[in-house]
Every structure is written in structure tokens, then in C-alpha cells.
Length: 439
Image (tube, rainbow, N blue to C red; front, side, top):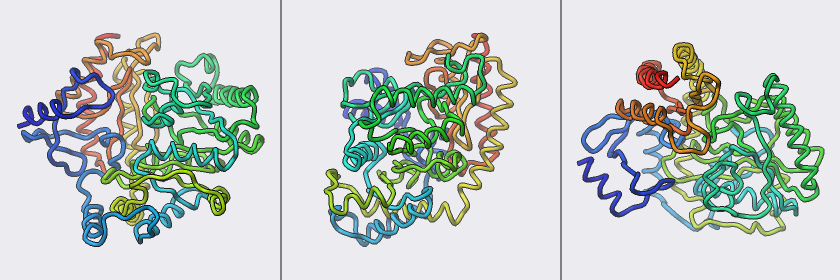
């Protein structure tokens, strides 16, 4: 059954981010908790929460019931119509987002949240340029892809105009950090950001767009030294700060949002999706301050989506946030993240192929490196033989996650148990043993 289902998917549909002849999909017909099951009964441990979005795991009864109940009342109305789940989700987002973020514009995903955040920043400020960093990822539509510094944008360039990039944190390999502490390197990165702004002209820059906590470009995360300077720079030059929490939001890093690790930082606009409803129905949002939102009281918000504020999606978001609050999911995820990191650090001590463990909470990555620190598979390249072997061991043992360049992503659902983490560690141990042979 699995073979036939995979064949039919390949025959009649296209897969993203790959040449179609290289697509050899596993199948999924049902899922529960941190596991999903193939058409022939194969059991897989979901170690990446699918696309780092199924934060509450599969089959959450509370979310499913909320969707069912809403479907019986109302599934869809135009975005110009007011509904109860839309209002309630807006209220909840005001409660859980940081500082003065208070009003939401709902989208269908993270990528169109980024698109609309850029529009909103430009409309509000009257300025055009958006400053982002290399080794970031903000989505796959034309504007959000251009805003990213990830090589996935390259085949679609030139993209949209007036996106400016600067070099971000990479204490392990960036020359900016050579012979310096991470804090000293972060200070230099912040200086280069300010220099870039001055070169580009502050009066032309609408916003700085940064991930609250780095995601699929490698989980390269600067510390408070950098973030405090970013806040100062935004205030000094009257530049908006857009924080992308699409992946790092809703408990992923042990806080409600990645930027919550830096309490001095005050986003003007925040983009969210993925964990907002654990991926159960497509949903995203742009959350902004009253100051920005009030601009559109008398000025048209030139943006819209057919499925903005979709009643089923909003109902699933309400159920997700309420479930998280009632069950202390963020706090429990933070505690499990400590155990998780402890076990990952044990693997680092054991395996010479592990160059570094990076991340926070249940948002971690294993960086594989040669003895001289060079990555086991170069940035922006196809997987080298050792990384192919690592990927095969993981797949052969039904541990499903991203193996990208020289890294293994370790981002399971927030509901994972210590026993399930140890199940994954046993498989990772086998994969790293294979990698050690190439060091």
C-alpha cells in the first residue's frame, strides 16, 4: 500500500524544493502524539514536528473538537465579516505576545505573514528598504524569499526590490568571531548592521526584519549584546523592528516566543504561524502595536487574502493557545528542553564528528564537523557521502527529521517524553557513529 500511495503522489502531484525524480516519499495515513504511521503500518518518530510546526503533537483532541464544533456552526465567511473565533484569537494573541503588540491581521501561513508585514511597514513608515540578514529564512513567496538570506532564494532572483542584507551571528565559523568571544563577535555584527544602515541611508529604511530565534538556516543565534544594540539602533534611526516568530514561536525555544529571551527588545511587528495552531489548519498572523494599527484607521490597508481570518483556522488557534495555557505547555517544554540538551551534550562528548550543539528548549541542532572545524558538508551544497550515510541511518531507523548540509535538526513536539527522547538518542548515536568514520 505504501508503495502504491507514494507512486500515485509522484504521478499526479509535485513536491517542493526538489527535482521530482529525486523524490522518494514515505507515506502517512494516521498520527498520534509524536508518532505517525505509514500505509503499511510503519511507525515513525516525528523528530522535526513535521516542518517544526506540530508543537502539540498529532491528534490533539482539544484542537480537533474545536474544529469540529466550529464546522457545525460556520466554516467560512469573507474576511470583512466579524466572527467569534477571530475576535477571541485576537484577544489571546494580545495576551501572549510581548510588550505592546495588540492587534492582528490574519493570514494563511508564515510566508504571507512576512509579505504583509513588509507591506504594513512600508505603508506606515513611508519608507521602502527592509534590512535582513544572511543565513535567515522568511518564506517561499517572492517577497519573503527575497527577504531571506537562505540559498533557496537564489534560483528565483532577482526577486523584489529594496531588500538589504548584512552578515549575522556565526561564532563557530565566521571570521568576525575569530579569536573573539561570542559577545565580542556579536558586538561587531551589531556595528556592521549600523554601518549598513548608514550606507543605505536611514531615512530610506522602513524596517529591520530578524528571526526571533534562528531556524532552518542553522539555528545561529546571537546573544543579548546583539539584540540590545538592535533595539538601540531602531530607536536611534526611527526604524521599525519586525520579528519573525513563525518557527520559534509558541513554546518552541522554552519561551512563548524566541524574542522573549531578550526582554529589552520591543518588536513593532511580529509574524507568527506554525505553532499558532500546531499546524492543524493553515493559519498565520501579523501582530502589531496600537501605534501602527491606528495608522490604518484612516489609511487603507492595501492587502488582503481570501482566507484571512478563516473561522475554522481561528477556532483551532484559540483551542491551541488555551490548551497551552491550561496545561503549562511552555513551562513543561522548557523543562524537557533542559533534559533534551543534556542528552545531546552527552552525544557531543562521545562523538568526534559533533562540532557543536546549538539551540534552546526543544529547538536544537547537531552541527557535524571535521577535526579542523570545517563542516562535514559545505553550506549550500548537496549532502556529501558522510551526511548521506547519516541521513540513511536515521531513515532506516524511522527517525524523521531534517538532515541539511552538515546539520541534524532536533525539534520534536513539545509534548515529547524523556522515554521518547531516549528512543531518539539511541538512533542518533548510531547515525553519529557512522559520521565518526569520516573524521
